[in-house]
Length: 322
Image (tube, rainbow, N blue to C red):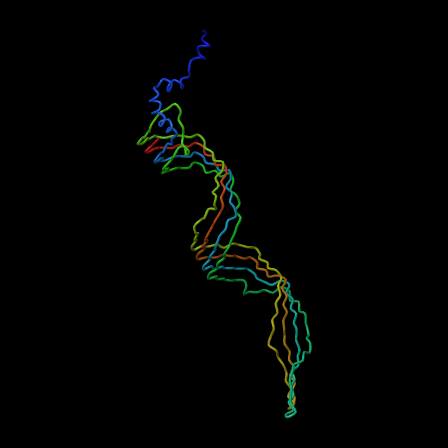
């Protein structure tokens, strides 16, 4: 018989073990073979220190940020202007005329009333008007609260963190793998190690494709105290056109004839139209006692985390069980 045929008839190594054992011993080993699908349990894994040579994050995306409440307390704004004037001022003066009358005929009765006599209008183009009282303004806001704020935060791209130090890294109750592992050709009842200590370990590269929390990140309240905004120069502040009316007290001349009387009344009304309010050479500064942001929530999606040159020192593994 040739060597080739002899090799075909030779049984495999993994078939020799159970075939040559007594049947009673095989039956006793079956519970042991069924228990070979095990989990490795590590009570505690600790790394004393470490160094990440380079950390790069491709993109950090933020969803719509929401703030439940913004509270500002003790805000003072200081506005200093080199010039403050009203542009293209037009004054329309209206003289509203009316006549009040009365009569009294004794037993025959009496009456009174007011009759409108129309009005007279005079247009007065004024031009530009300098307003010195607007040149220096101090505005004080004791407190103000705004609710239901939302903001769009642009993504951060290509973040380079550079060398990053690690310290005090630990993991507890680690199970490998989570669904258990099966070992064929090995019959062990149980394995336990009190601890393993390694001087260090290194990893060339590590990549994380995506890290996305299922819920938005809830930040604690942010409180800022004694906020000072330095003076900022603004060349010009220009407001839009506006108009307002001012009415003076009515003036009149009365005539009394005994049984009847007349009063001629004139009511001046100024109709003012302003093309624009201009503040030139403005310096604006502000001081705020406190700013509080409450109930901040931001969805975060981290994509493409790349780590190069991982060096771990003083690795300790405690209480390993199989």
